[in-house]
Image 1 (cartoon, rainbow, N blue to C red):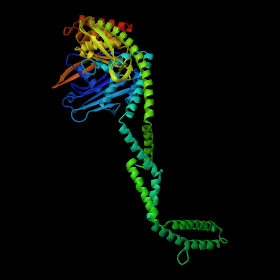
Image 2 (tube, rainbow, N blue to C red; image 1 turned 180 degrees about the horizontal axis):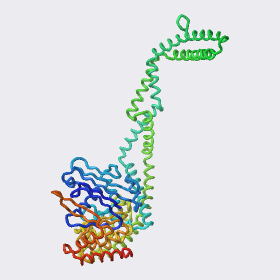
Image 3 (cartoon, rainbow, N blue to C red; image 1 turned 60 degrees about the vertical axis):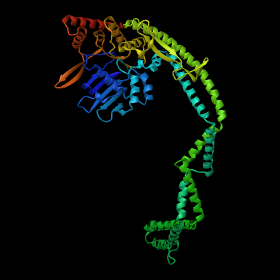
Image 4 (cartoon, helix red, strand yellow; image 1 turned 90 degrees about the vertical axis):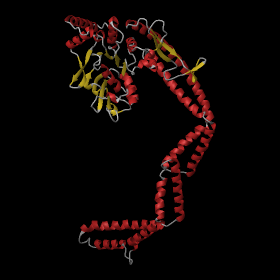
Length: 578
């Protein structure tokens, strides 16, 4: 639910923080006080377009923030995670900055997000109804989701089966389409893949080969210098100048010190070190001799190495950045070549798989359709009853379930129809508000008040509704009054027992039922006008309800009546009569 809303420099509001609560939150105030500004701010936070005209005059940017607590809505977590949004300590924080100049920013839990993602997350958390575009009832694609939310566990399992089968069918059909593409393209692809694989295989590549060849090329290109240096080192160590080498000098030094051991045994470690050095240098001389003999210039081998490196470079330019990448490319193309080469066999396999999948999918989709029709019949009857109590006794509410023909669709009976993850049905809510008029789509309804009452009726008959934890009704009282307004208030209170409700109203009959009552007022300081909002105390609430009920003629008798009504409604709530 929405727990906190912060608004800064937005329209007439300079700075506002409001804390909402579970249950029914009512917003009242005189016309132009700023009630619509609060709803507009929520809309912008939920991803609606934010124009620079919303930034308060004289300020560089507007800042909005909303905190949602998901403690009572764990069912939303999988969908949120799928969108890449994970609550932190059970909270999701929407932030929006609307700049007068420059870039606007939208964030979720402090992370910048595309507005499209903000909008999807917002649709999961808030359902807003009234004089705004953010109205799920106007979008027929949402009607099937709303209806299906009424199903039981068995219904939802059937839903899941249909969705999985539909995804499987789409995957198989895509593969079939790819295989059935132009035969000439397939043959050209086979020729190209065959050439590429053979070219790589002929090279007989091995991992690490290029590094080894590069090192060998460096040695061969510098063979003469290596030979000369190795020979010089060998001579210094083993032959020496004028027949006296390092090795000879070490031997002589060892003999000299060894002769002194009879006088000083402490020289023993030094004699041993000289002896060990002689052994190591002798070994080094032997290795140097072998290295010198091997370090011979071989132009033929150097040419072979250069040609091999050139070949490896050519293959890397064509197939990958390294020899390992070229080998991986060859393996991938072998698999692709195998698939294309076994084209006919795979076509037959796919045809059989598609036929079986469609058979099972058709069975499950028809079962789902039958269950959905039963749900629709029950919901239509219940909504009809609720609408009568909400001041629309002549309204006729129907739920139309149809199917769309599609040449490449799912075979159902003697025709093929469109199938999606939701099945084969197209669901649309229709209504006739007046006798003699045929039912029409809800989007054709002119009255925002009627639309809000329809949604209220839908919510009233659904224990879970669409699973959205916060419902916002803007101007739900349009065109109603008297006893109908009282019934609307009762309905709001009932819905608010299952979900948080925030409602803007001009009628005391609705505001009586508030769990929290907020007042918006407009004040002028100097030459600037501001909108203010605060939660009413019990005494302030009586005064505001009296104003709504009696207009400018507030008397003690009116106040006493208001207090009596409030006491009566509190008693009904404690007794859970609605």
